[in-house]
Length: 134
Image (cartoon, rainbow, N blue to C red; front, side, top):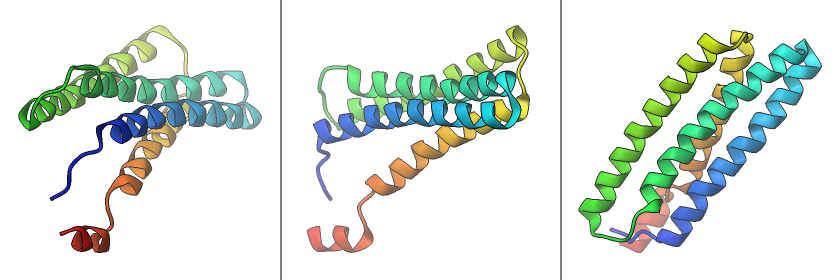
């Protein structure tokens, strides 16, 4: 068993949000070069949806005062639920209120969502590291 380094976890979470925002811009620029303004805006909106969901989750998980493991776990579950709600609501709003290129929008979302999973995988301890610490 290992303890969680809270300041490191907070930096990682908000670093993921910043990385997602950066990837959103890069994907939007690529979409602009390939398919024009509507595709660029669509990709940016898709990336913004994933980024907003991650920001909402990080805010809930790391925004509260300390507490025990049970409180931390409940904040994690609440944050994940809020992330899902934010993503669904934003997709509905974007699809109802703007003219988007769906493929570009989902590509922007997928690219920024991939950043989240890559960061998570990189943050997990390696199996050998975990055995040495035990």
